[in-house]
Image 1 (cartoon, rainbow, N blue to C red):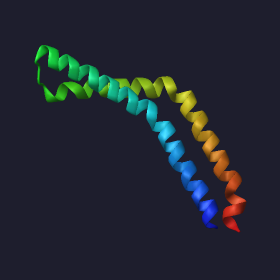
Image 2 (cartoon, rainbow, N blue to C red):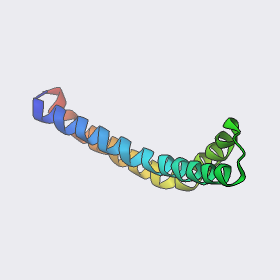
Image 3 (tube, rainbow, N blue to C red):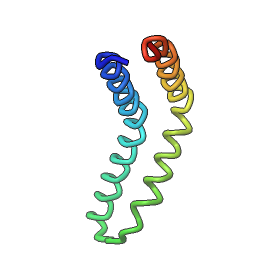
Image 4 (cartoon, helix red, strand yellow):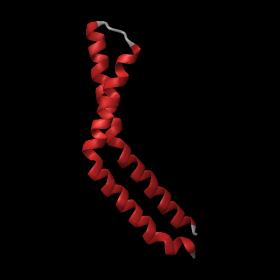
Length: 89
């Protein structure tokens, strides 16, 4: 395995990881900001109030985005399998 092949594979791994995690992280961040704004307006400072909406938002995004997530993971797996002859040399 050459350094170039390893660099390409690790770059593809990190790029795919960022692409797959971005929708869930963005949904969690948006819901967290909305809940924080609600807490600031109503002066309710309950620490656990943010967890349930964030978890529900992340699960909703996973449910809605699942076909796309599977498509991205399948493409990544196919690219890794196509690179196997270069890795095994």
